[in-house]
Amino acid sequence: MSLPTNPNAPHRLSTELQACIERLQEISQPEEADFDQSSYGVSLHEAFSGLRAAAIRVVESSHINGLEKVGQIPDLLKGIALKRRSREADEIFWEQMSQHYQVKSSWDADFTNLTPALQMRLLKQMIQQEPEPARVMRDEVNRLGDDAFMEGLTLALKLIEPTEIRFDPSFYEVLFTLKRRLKPHFMPGAVEHIAAHKDLYLGFFSRLLKVATLPHIIKPKLGDDMAEMVNARKAYILDLMGYSKAEAIDLIESGSADDIVPSPASFQRMRNAMSLPAEFLALLYQAIPSKVIMDIAEIAIDDPIGRMPYVHFERMGLARSSEWHMHKQEKSGLGKSIVLFEHAIHTPGIEMCVSRIAHQPLLSDEPGLLERVESVLANVPTSDPECLRKGQLLFDALVENMNKGKSTPKLREIIESGTIQPAFYRKHRKLKVARVEHDLGI
Image (cartoon, rainbow, N blue to C red):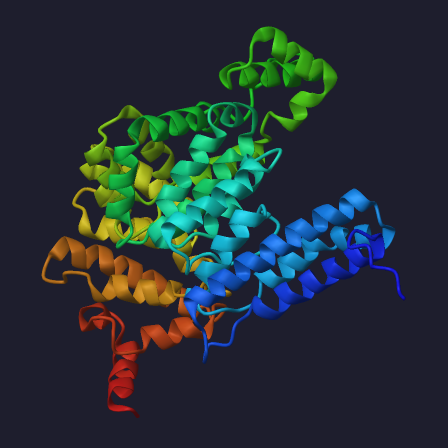
């Protein structure tokens, strides 16, 4: 007669754990043809529960082979999580996963098809388990769909408040994610959400502005010791970031200040992150007429994004002189200056400086850039003499550039096409003929 098998024998526990692993792998990606939400949820719950229980028993038994299998569970869960499932199955899968295991921020999973409530749960799990949550927050919030993004951003700010903003300059990185979402259809909802959490967002922006508006360097006076000047700069910045004098001295003497004080390049990146679309800032200022929003606009106006941005800045009461605009035109390449030219064409009192556009070769075509130039010229109100004069200056500069023969052939294609208004060709007889031939398909 054989002896009864010990259910707690280490090798048996290891075998049981392997069976649980295989069971979860088997059911995690259901066939769409015979998918049933209720039974799938029950099966997943049983599989996850069984896996956890089996893993605990193996750990308690200290069986070597079993412990090795337990160590493989995180990679197993990641592999299962990244499998493709239908929207309905994915919702159930992540619901069960988040109940039984902590979802890791290192998993490159797509959450956009999940309900906002579940996306929030997953985001909270991922951020809370990070020792430095601000450093991963941008990527985690970026996983969210548009319907959950602003709620997720708010949750992330609440989870990190109040210490992380003070101690981690990289916190501003999440604003790059916000900028990418701020399409016209998304802006009203984003403004409404920020207004509903006004104190949280104004506090967040204010702390960033303390650093983003600092001078990049403190200019040394003649005879000053450079090492002292470097430390003085660090102390000045640490003070404005909220550190006490004693804390600043300790950080500088230990060398830790180098990990906290942003470099000049970091300052510029922070300012770029805060350069939110002008249309969005105008809407936000209308909802929250705060100096904080105006201070962000003062940064954004130096490198604006969006259509006709200076019109939106002027709606906020933020305008620049004609000299400022001409200086920016002179120093900028076509990518940035086309926004300035469009504003100048439509705004009385602002002149054009097109010399750089006439002489600098356009060697490569930034996606959509020349089409943007084409659109600007196509929409000039030529019945207005001043608008026509300014538009003509831009067109003439592009023709001069084209005739030098050093720019992309696409420039000639656009100039000789039929989309730019005929009024601009009056001075250019050969181009006028080429345009007619283009229109006739010759």
